[in-house]
Picture 1 (tube, rainbow, N blue to C red):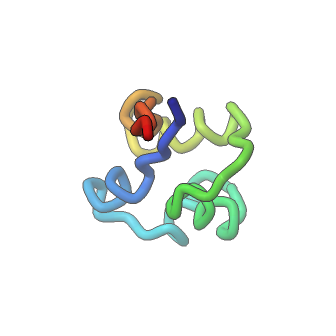
Picture 2: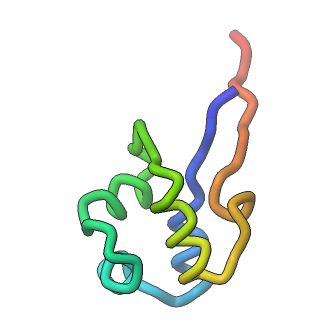
Length: 71
């Protein structure tokens, strides 16, 4: 299992850019970009809370647990 960050879909839904989210949350643009492209290794909980507050969503709207295919 792995955690997938669905920030790209949430930003599309909110019609918001990465830069706008960064400005509203005071999170660095490179950090937002890593989350957007699902390349984040560590996600501070306070950043996740800020994103949820700005996007008016729940944590489960952003994070998804996906089962890895077995080979």
